[in-house]
Amino acid sequence: MTWEMWAKMPCTWQTDSNFHRNQLNNSLDFLGRPHPPGEAIAALKVYVALCLKANFKAGSYLPDTGCVQRSISQLSELVGLSRPMTIKGLRKLQEWKIVSVKSGRPAIYHIVDYEKAKYWTKLPRTHLYAGPKENRIELLRNMSNRSKTTLHALQMYLYLAAIRDKKSHLAKVTYERMMEVMGITRNEVSKAISTLIGFNLISVRLAGPDEFFGERPSNIYWLRGSQAR
Image (cartoon, helix red, strand yellow):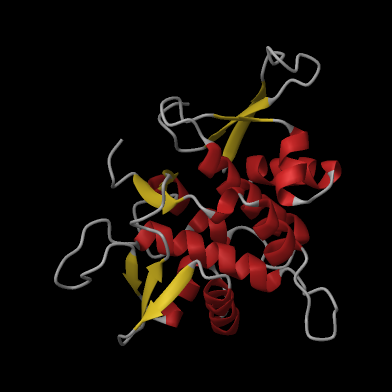
């Protein structure tokens, strides 16, 4: 694997059940009403875009690693969002403290914990772009910006990326575990998996019975674009 094919993503919040439940699925406005999923979808799409564009090595142009300097219009084009929704997504990322903003024109965005995370994984950069041009992340652009199922699918995609085995690049996990981490129902887990398969983001197969929990076999998932499959 080369860094042209893959992009680094720090793994911190992706496996945190409190983050999924409180920040992504159950966020409320000041009147206590549930927020529609659009802002959270925008935030996750922009987060992926920042990971794909982040500099892996420091240099004179961007002295810190994990930085991206792009205009709002450029970020909007990357993931297929309107400018207002891109701005709302960026604000969410800052509110969640997983992206910070540095001075610059256009602004410089820094992925929090890019250098210090105890564990990080790789996102299939080339596959997500779905072509040689890197001004549009086509596989994200194809996904709805409003559906609750899209939000769950994006959550699941980043969760599966974060729990993949480093050597095999496979993620082995039960429905029950995904329900527990993401705070969603079994039916919502199933819909999210179907969405990721439909948009060519993951592949899945049923694993054999677990040696310890033989009655609850896990599924095995891998991110499409992996050389492992």
